[in-house]
Length: 621
Image 1 (cartoon, rainbow, N blue to C red):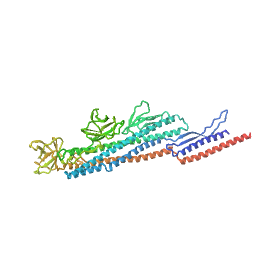
Image 2: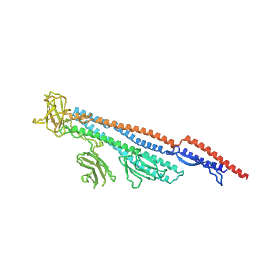
Image 3: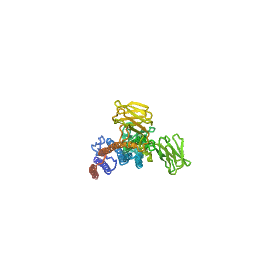
Image 4: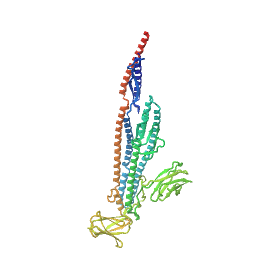
């Protein structure tokens, strides 16, 4: 009799537990991070007989355990896929935004406008209206390049701020993980453990999407986990039992990890995956692009300065620099209480005070201090020193402070320097005139590699051997005799000569230096020729170089898009695999619910039968 009662009662208890767990699974079918629960229904072992009792061979069922469906390998793959996708989802959109900024109008169109203006000026070098067009085109080009440089800098600063916010979120997640780990350690093996493990795993997934991690069971307690940064050996711990690390990030996206262990040294690492990895990679791409743009802008400034310097203005002065990339980054002190700002309105690194400069408001005036702390200037609302002008608009308070850090060579500083048509050098500083009696058809080009102002005569002494002689044009004295190399070049003192074409023995050329050349257009023409690169000097070719920048960056964007698509597909597969292991399938759970319900009802009927039999036996006594 007791066998029937015990069997029915244990079966009823086991299937009631199974029904409860199945109902919980169905209720959480859409709950993020929920792991399916499975009840293990095992036969209750029989009891062996003794001299005092009869043995039992069958005692029904018992629900021995509720298991969370979990596959560590599938979970690790899912976390890795989530980290990779999070990084790709940061990188690709930002690069696409910058690609649009690089390609839509901007410097490329402004450069074309500048080269067209120079070509027009070469056709009418004395026309001030045409020269004014050159000034306007130069200002447009400089402003376009500077705007792009500032846009890239703003994007980088925005990403740095986003990285700081992301790290704040990561620290919050780590602190929550440490609390949950402590709760898990004190929960024992009761029914409250599974929800804690679910919550812990959801937080781990959140952390993995923020930064790539490795998760392993704790060696001392398999219900706990140990989390380390990245997937390489030797990386610092982020979570150890109930203690969490603290993360910091710098403007370049580099992480500093202060491990949870007391006294453990801080470690610096560049994150590779997760949103922080994506931000770090994107910041690197922006810095590289900014550096490339800086180099391109500097080449424009240097090449045009080199050509313009060989020209002469109407007044006979050498052409000055056309563009400048000198500048300073202004940093206000956090403790400033006034509303004043600091603006650099003129900059020339060659003559300005060197190093970092500090401006402090004291007794109603601004005082400038150089890198050594020596005061070099004062002013009420403006300070002017050679190479630098700084204005301070707004209301300043005593004690307000601004620091100017040199930022020379940055595209964001690009400025067009000439402000008057007369400052443009149209003519050439070197005039080469072939003698009218020459019988050969060669042309001579002369460049200075150092100071030289005296006119010279260049004579072909032997066309067969390439021997040339250089004489002073004023007194006929010989200066040098040498032979042309295979490329028709020869150097003599501060001069470099190149003979192109077929020369004849006895041909001569008069070379005059520093002629104003009021109607001369050679410098304008040489500047316009910089539209294409000179293979011998390497000057020019700005448009082609910018196109190369676009092509290289376009390849990066294409790779980022491909990576984004690939990581999305991998994550989708990993999530499906994880769902197969840990997810809830309604059809399966419905079938189990029906089966468990039938078994529960059958055991209830058996229990009722046992009760009726027992009552019958009692009544028969």
